[in-house]
Length: 160
Image (cartoon, rainbow, N blue to C red; front, side, top):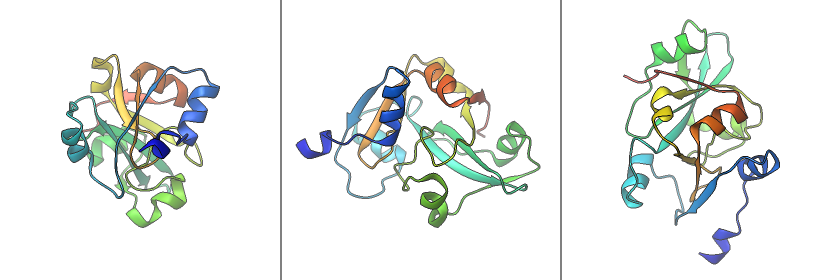
């Protein structure tokens, strides 16, 4: 466990460089576990725990969507939020190549390219939300306003 605490992800380096305040939470995780199970394991609120999904639009552009771990992305609302006719989730095998992150460690901060990002509007109900830290077993606790400002995201209704 001590070794894991030394992990400094690309997302953390970006937050440090921009002087954006955040907290880190490390937990034991060897392989992908969905966000609901992680929230249960760590006794965290589903509403405050956000997963990061990557989608591709009809235009072939990639988009990032952050939403509570227990919610499903409404593809029609998601497409509308980014000005696309339609979007579909990126295939799992393509996540690392497109984002630089692995499944379960994908965070909207520090992807290979800064994609247009939409965060579910409910994030604004909280002083802090929990997002992936950029590696398995790492979470970032950050103000949604700070996150939106840092990555140029917008907050909209994107779930069912």
